[in-house]
Amino acid sequence: MSAENIEEAIHEILVADATVQDLTTRCYPATLPQDPTYPIILYMRVYGAGENALEGPVGMANPHFQIEAWAKTYAAAKALAKAVRNALNGYRGTSGSVRIGSFLIQSERDVYEPAVACHRIIMDFSTWHDE
Image (cartoon, rainbow, N blue to C red; front, top):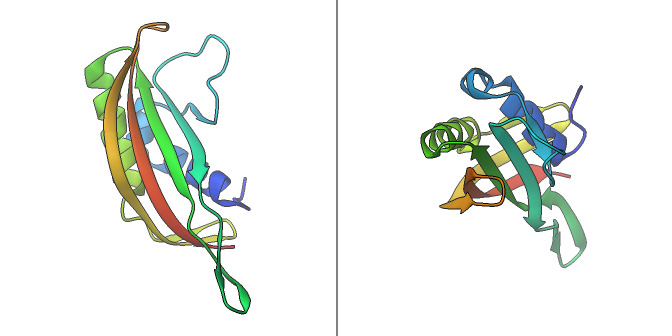
């Protein structure tokens, strides 16, 4: 698969990273699958669009993404979050046809989900990429 949009690029970068692969290859957009096997990475765009100048679009976008590391234990969730953070934070490069100028972490928080007895680490990232 060759990334054609920023969401596919995020997926490709994460599943190609050796440290992430050692922990999981399960990486999903927006929603968890039915009866998932943990650990899991979940990613979604939370806001952002293409940038504009007075003359119109400039060809760059600055979306913000929430990327979550889910696991049954706190230690496993923290380890997966660290691997995700190391794979993405500071990333610059090309994935498929998507050129990424920067990918930077903005915040991180820990949550426990009692309904599924899982820990999740929620990371917020800002990215700049070509449209």
